[in-house]
Length: 80
Image 1: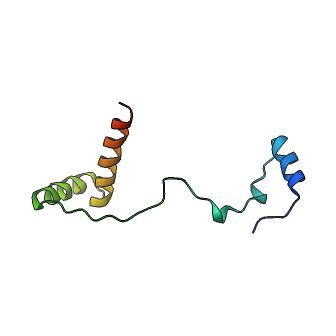
Image 2 (image 1 turned 180 degrees about the vertical axis):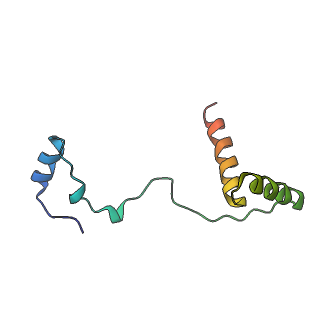
């Protein structure tokens, strides 16, 4: 639980560069566009087998591999 101080005191401490984290309620922090949503995708069997082989080689799960590859691709496209 965070400590209680007045708004003015909070602003003063912030403006002076003090550490104000003790006065923040971090239980409500949200990261925009970082929420998770489950999606179902049907892949052909050959692709699942290839994903599983690559994931095993890298020592990661199939899901981690798919997210990494898709994320990398989308970041590259975003930069174009």
